[in-house]
Length: 430
Ligand SMILES: *Cc1c(COP(=O)(O)O)cnc(C)c1O
Image (cartoon, rainbow, N blue to C red; front, side):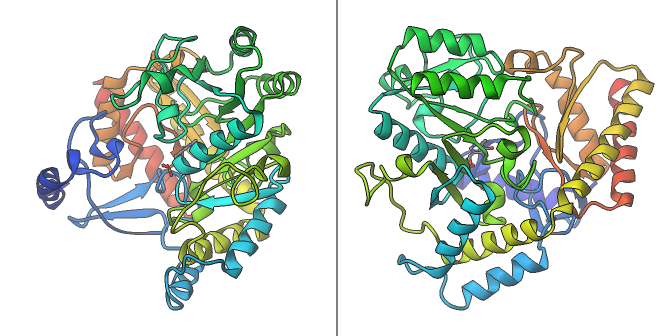
């Protein structure tokens, strides 16, 4: 496979962009080799600058659930562009999308649109702090909530009670207000709450975690957190930036029947445009300016083009609930094929899957939290990634990511993926 133009672009990019990329994982550091520069995409396929075609299993990290350049989303975007791409003033579409989100996700009584998942999570914890008058938050090791200072704390490190920054530039003062617990460990959360009586503003988590590879909640984990938060007056925040409108129309909270106080959204909600949102109980959301005193704003928030894309996406998903069954079927076929090949070859593995998300971990331990995810053979994953890429299948360039399927995958694409998987495994094991 010739990737010369991509390589030239990457060399040039490194002169002008830190690491040559605008988001670190794109640099392929975790898997070796050089990143592919994408020129276009349609349906289930990406096309790179050298004209190679890849089957898409990331879909822009989730948003392209209908596949790329879907006619509905495209025409919505064109329609909005023609009437000026930004006003910085209220518009009809913002009312329509807010009403639709509140309808689809009943725990959201009011919602504020922002421009990214990072902004959504950052703003949600500010609102929770303003509402409770408390300073500390609890997050889970291996959960990602964007790159705001408060979240770059002990993401997977051993420090459990005392946060220490994961990144230079995050101050110790900020770190001290973020407490972390292992995912799926209710007792650890209870211990943190007991040690910090009446100081915890909120618990934020991915109710199905996708940012340490895919990890599902243990039975009673979500409901246990719900009960704990009720007892202690803590705001429970589900970060559904990844899972919202993907695992079910109403997200994990619909699927598992556990209701958070606040929800953060992103990815699919923008149909590929940069959008995030946070919402929840009326009394919490009414703490936000201009009703309340918690400040949060955005020049481009509720942007007309982004709202048009998001509305088209959400309306389509709402009108076509069979999409989720269709995705489940695609996911089942692919993961069954992968399991079959691996078992034939006798490799130890764990495959976590739910709906249209899955991760193949190169470990024979069950993966239920970041600690167990880290037992994966990441060097072997790197080889697997490259072997798949060579055979025209584009995976997430890290072991600690989920894959995201789209409805655009045909039976032939599925066969191609299963074939590439088997050949790649044979190659890396030989
Ligand atoms: C992607 C993601 C974010 C951050 O969203 P950005 O739009 O990249 O800022 C936050 N939380 C979760 C669960 C995510 O998957």
